[in-house]
Image (tube, rainbow, N blue to C red; front, side, top):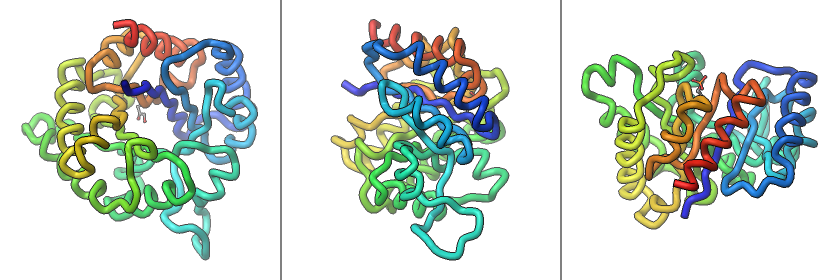
Length: 257
Ligand code: 13P
C-alpha cells in the first residue's frame, strides 16, 4: 500500500513572515490527526528557516524547490542538497516545468541534482509532463517516455523510498484546467510501466506518482482516488491554508475509497 503525499510548491511566494504564518496555521490544524499520508511544504530558500519549526514531521515536513547539481565550490547563487538537509529539508523538487522553461534546465541537470539529493539522504520529487501542443499532437505519452528515459536510468541510487515522480501536464499548471481523472490515471499508469522498465518492477510498484496541475479541494478526492495517483503536487492552492487542508481531506477521503 503506497502512502499518499500532498506537497505544496509555494513557488516564488511567501517570505519568512508570511511563510511562518501559513506553516504554523497548517501545523496547528493537522497536529494530532492520524493521517494516512505525508504532507510537505516547499517554501522559497529564504523562508525555509522560518518554516522549519512548524515542519518537523508531525505531520508537516519541509521541502525545497531546487538545489545545486554539485556538492560545493565556486557556483555563485547555488544551494547544495547537503545544506538543505542541515536546514531540516526532507524533499527537493527537481525538473519542474518552470525550471525547464525559464531556466533552460535539461535532463543532465536533473540527473546531477537528483544524485545530489540522494547523496544528502533526501528524497527527490521529479516533475515531468507534456505541453499543450504535444498533447494536441497526440505525443503526450512519447514526451513523458523521453523525459523519464532521459533521467531515471542515469540515476546512481534511486529507489522507491528516495524518489517520487510528479506528472504535471504543463497545460494544467496554473491554468485552472485540470487533467480529467481518466487522463491522469492513463498517464500515471504509463509512467509506472516505464518506471518498471527503467528501475525494475518492484521499485515501480512502490513508487509514489503525484499529479500536479490545478489540483483543488473539489477535485483532489477523485484525482487521488485513481489507482496510480498517489497524491498531489500543489501550486496555487497550497498558498491558502483552507485550500491545502481541503486537498489533504480529499486525499484522506480517497483512502476511504
Ligand atoms: P498549480 O496547482 O498552481 O496549477 O501548480 C501546479 C504546480 O506547478 C505544482 O508544482
